[in-house]
Amino acid sequence: MSTAFPPTSGPGDRHDGDLPDGRRAGDRLSDDGAPGRSGSGTAPRGVSADGDARPSSPDSTVRGGEVPFVRAEGLGRDHRLRRERLTGPRPVRTALHDVDLDLAEGASLGVIGESGSGKTTLVRLLLGLDTPTRGTVTVDGRSVRRGRGADLRWLRRQTGIVFQDPYASLDPRMDVGRIVAEPLQALGLAGDSPGGSVGESDAVARVLTDVGLEPDMVDRYPHEFSGGQRQRIALARALVHRPRLLVGDEPLSALDVTVRAQILDLLQGLRADLGLTLILVSHDIGVVAHLCDQVLVLKDGHAVESGATSEVLAHPRAAYTRDLLAAVPRL
Ligand SMILES: Nc1ncnc2c1ncn2[C@@H]1O[C@H](COP(=O)(O)OP(=O)(O)OP(=O)(O)O)[C@@H](O)[C@H]1O
Image (cartoon, rainbow, N blue to C red):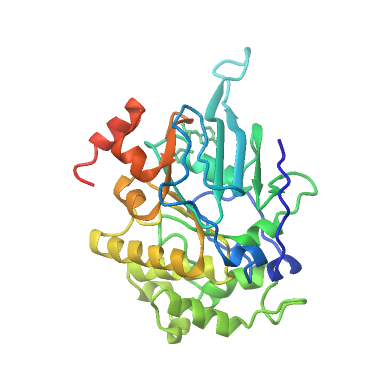
């Protein structure tokens, strides 16, 4: 089903510019964006405190609210592997099995599971960075489709992404001002672009302040910053165009414990202040418990459990979830 919710419109939908798709976690981020929030997005709907979750079930859903901002239906991804012999069929590895997911605007979803369970695959499909073998994705009621003639600028404008490695994700040749402004330029939102309307230096100064950095850091280069500061820069870049959806693929795991706590608090504050919808991929169940009101547990590409985080953590139904929780020394 390609669900057609009335798409909200806003200033972000009126600009041109895009970046190529097909990136993997760790790629430089410059392909997101939305310069303002759409009308209905200003008051995040979110999920209720108890998460409005449906009963957990295999390959089931995270039902976050009445109108899903992000919806995946029957989402699956197979990879054809190389033949071991010249004859015979090419074996298939299924990275994701038919996952359904609904997430209301303003809600936060943690995607957890062991390495290789399909977390990054799911996120890449949701963001239109990879093409599903099966199923559909809609964001804000619009179909996320790749391929010839596809134009995902509208999605880039609504999305910010933060990756794991704050060292690899920042271009060492660019100063902070250029790094953070990159999405505005790439999406044609900066005032000096045709049709662009966002004052670049003001937007950069504002978002640097939002993430706890000084606006006068714009002339400095990534190597002059600590890991935590770099992740703040990456966060500033992800948010400079005021996206509605923030996606973090292990954004804290490369940081040491103290810095991790600071960035965790920062993310929590930003999410509330900016009314962001959050999808967070993390190995760290403690991080998910802190930040996310919904959780989806993946195992071997299957959604084995989903629901309100408090409920899933307190009463895990799937044996796999219980094992994951047991593997955490203390939440
Ligand atoms: N291009 C590809 N070709 C073949 N197999 C792939 C490809 N991309 C991913 N896979 C496989 O799909 C499965 C899911 O991978 P994915 O990267 O989504 O896992 P993950 O949960 O994000 O892992 P990690 O936590 O280690 O990042 C893995 O078995 C992986 O080897």
